[in-house]
Length: 92
Image (cartoon, rainbow, N blue to C red):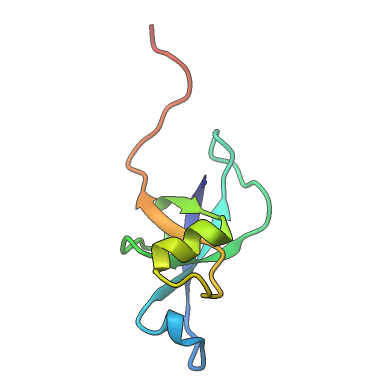
């Protein structure tokens, strides 16, 4: 899993049946300081995230397919949560 920023959504008129009724979002992986890390990718949105949201992305094909409920589905990444806040280190 990793933290990412939602850049926006995509629209596909022709797609695999597993994606029907699902939002597909473009997400940009972030480092823990909030900077861009790696290339952006597509992820199925399971939590109604929107552009600009910080999200938690599961990027493991087998686990993503389990969440989708289809062990043969062509899914690699799924948005599993919206991150309200996180901090690094201890304030003590």
